[in-house]
Length: 442
Image 1: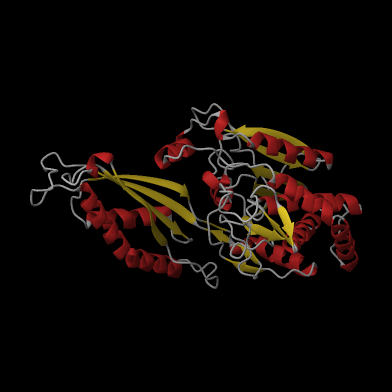
Image 2: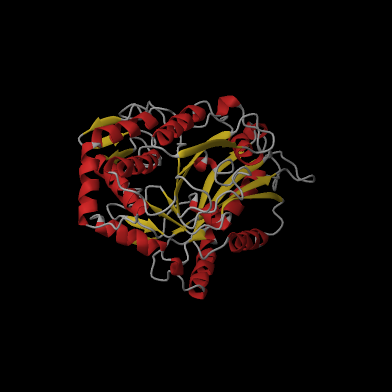
């Protein structure tokens, strides 16, 4: 039986949502209470190595299994067919759990709902509330992950429950995928070898905080992210003694290179503008020019003496960029900019965390999401998602047309900051949005 989302259906969902409000807020609070952060070493280089190359141990992911099991139990109790697994990299002692659930039947599903249950860290000493207590206050729920992304994730689960409780039947086959390492690159989640070749949905909605200071949006593109590690070592012929004019200083060489990269950002922006002119798709959607940020600069301990100018210097630089800019073009700019500095004796290591991704305008997923939202009294407009997300591997690796949508506010809800929050209205409107999408096809 196909359900068309008319006024009566909308009223039924509204009544169910209001009736279940305390239960669904309780579900989010339950998920937030599990601190599903990674316990990585303080050393940034070692942390990056664990993310990229493997070597996770059980103590790095102490709470992930608990939360994944809890989410799986909730989905199974709602009559879905649940499968659990873990994404790994070579060398791992422990994988990162993921949860999949789908409606009855075999073959490709019509719509995949995907989100992540892992969160960035939180320092209780700088929060006004316990970051894992999910305190309710004046219509808001405070806690790490309330918006990014346990709020959207729990809303997806609750949307399915709303359909079950109202007796409505979805007009499509639906699947859920919830992973546990989006915040550290997704290589043990959507990108993992365990999931490659297993996702075949005709379209996907990613649950991330996509509203921007009150303007609720549908993200039709997501940023790419590249990280560059630069290392300058003492030259074989140079002296490190500070009393000698022209003494070799890897730190000074590094500072000079970083200053040049910052000055050369306009050339990268010009390349982005040329790309946008060559690719007219989504020409009316405003997107940010590439961002170049220096993440860190350090010098080895041997350089701590006032009589020594030598010692190894390391820097980490990040570039984030919207489509149609590509990782290849960013890398071309980077190598050109470094070459312009002459022989600075640098070692260059490039990590491509994400390639940018875009929803083809002709697919129509964004238009369907907007129409369903409008029928439920929710206004959503098309926008460029201002960060990276699992949309990237879903599009680029799995070939699934994908957009990003929820009613949580990325800009206003202190995402990744102290006192992260979501309003009860944002949570329940997200339930309403996802339920509407489950009831009608794209």
